[in-house]
Image (cartoon, rainbow, N blue to C red; front, top):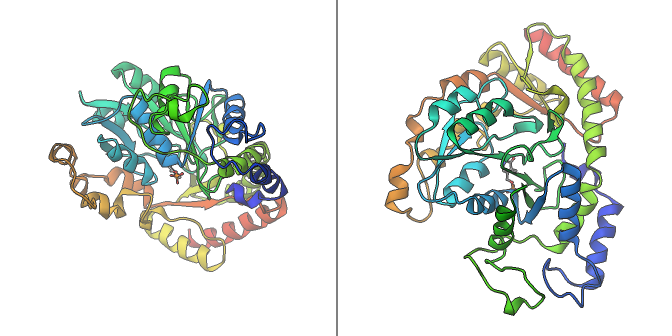
Length: 396
Ligand SMILES: *Cc1c(COP(=O)(O)O)cnc(C)c1O
């Protein structure tokens, strides 16, 4: 699953090139850096690989989301539709720009249910954020159609689905804009990092400026640069970008290993009677970083979760997880901000604790997701799948 499993000499060599110059910042210092521009190099490599016009690196996936929303003009009072199953960063970013996260039900794709999305649209809605959870995609064709009909943006949160595709196009490049995260547990890691992907030149320029205090990056005298807009510091450093360059070069290898191991496990699990897999709109595009099973009932899922864990082949039972599903987001439900929000912002927020997510509960209470390790051999994967099959079959 995470790129850190393939960490090695390539990463060290890249970092050493930066350490040799001592220039750890991604901008300026043109004379001293001896032609070493790791952030620029990584942006170019990402652009050419995924087929997008512009890539802007940031300090994290969270700041990539905040940056692109600013560039898209999403702000005070705008509503942004998100799935109730996601990583907290998705709604944190929406709140950070002064907008309103509207959480809607998921379905057996484990991400946005297009009907729930359509129902949630209001005159304030600005964007839909398909979050491609656990390595595979939302039903993008339907969501793109809805967005078009209602004149909304599609911002893909592809932080968990680097290397996945939909109808042959890389996830993160299909909507109006997309984001990857390169945090430590993602398919490709920089330690910490993220990237904004878009074909929109204006949004790219704004992202470049926003993530560096509004600097226009014209010329090579930082002090003389102008600032068309206010921004913040969401820059990535050259050290992180250097790790990213080495990791990005391994993307095809990472995806190939995931797919091989996923296939071996799935061949075993498919033999279990009465088990369902997560629905995947384009199976060929699954990055295969995980595999998710949908059990016949919550009770069986809970028992399977315990048994599998006991036997060393456990997975994630999201329903009880504090980070990824609305059920346990008490800090959001109670709006536990450290400092006060503007009253207008607070007044526009839905009361998340009173919203009905029973449709999502009916799926999430039955799902267990298993990570696919890059370090397993094909035989390891098969044996693991076989062990899981025996344990689960005994419970059904
Ligand atoms: C990891 C992740 C993010 C945020 O990335 P960070 O780099 O950790 O800030 C956003 N959305 C999803 C779905 C993620 O999994």
